[in-house]
Image (tube, rainbow over all chains, first blue to last red; front, side, top):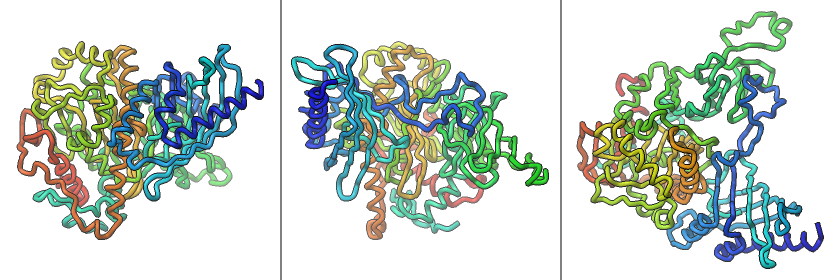
Length: 180
Length: 422
């Protein structure tokens, strides 16, 4: 991967994070393709296959993956339309989870850029640390990884797909009212 | 009993002491009197369909292992090693012939029997009666409409009696079509800084908050077209034993306005009407709570949940999404998507609820705030027993009748030492 492309991707992700922290949500939507899939699966605790804590009875029932699959429940499973409605709701003056609004800080790190499935796409891995504080003493830490497909259209990079995996299995925050 | 319960619940005036949401001694008494005695929800049968399938959960703060044994029977045990009290199974779900404690290696078969003890011959001199040191089972376990319930109390009435007249309402949620329901894989789990009773009473009877708390969700399409209105009927129903159900009018619908879902609901309406009987011409069950901490919703989302108590000021919420087993795959997919966008930690409806329940709990830390009673007087005197609906029914759909039934049961169970008096 060319350094220039890596730098471009980094700057894109940082700019996006700044928009989210500044609550420029409508501008953020412009950075997403119309066919976006924005997916945050659930994580659960599972014994690895070699664990001696259990002996498996029925191997065909064994699932090692901690991350829920496509048709399972998810914390979020959005398209551009549903994200737009979430953001429109924030403008209603009655979105109580965000009224008063959260103050967020997205720290984006560990960025890796690979070739995508097509000429105009890039596969991008990153880690995030999202700190949220709100009202007087509320604070939450949302930490995890992202797997993005970025697509170039008329010279402009956009997010075409984002998989967000939080590290917590029981979410230690009372809600998820922000974006990643 | 530790806590002085006098004056906490005043149903004549519809007043409730805020001490019950924050005081530690009252909470400890709830663990003893309510969570160690009442029937509590464990999991849905479709989560453990095959021999060896297990699911770990909690009854109150007690960790519980639900497992279908090799012979095919569903059992539940304290998820605690009988030796030193270590937590036995640390995975959320899976399949196992046996469970082995991480501390000293005591091994239990999936029917709870102690199977193997390291150093039994040399260190115990073969002098340990293994039949006495199996996993501690729940006192009673029963399944209704695929919902697996258990109680730690051998004297608790059978599940069917405990549910009583709420059973028809449960049928509408979970058995309206042949085959009942199944759950979508996975459970939403998250922690909210609120007392467990606030969400339980909200689902039990709070038709009041929807029009204000959730207006922004309704107007932005999170529940699709939400066409409920007062003129069209709908009642709050308290079928006894502290359970509460909210209904809408028979001709109303609050389903997500997704073409697949609306077409599906229209296509099965006649079949469901036949199966559920003429009561469905009077009311459409919509949301409810089974005392103490199981709630369900079948309007903008098809979900059920448990409010696990985690101290007076904290609740761990577990949320499942369910679908009719007989529904076609594209309809199941549509229900899954609409459910998780409306309910769960990110839900356009639910994310606002946790914020309100948190503040209703946390302001009660102030001793002066706590002196003021909370008001659940709405609709006092405007309810009557309706034999057709099998419960105490409100004159108007928006009321706090069900709250009063819920807290009146709470006070009875907290105070009584015997099920005979309940």
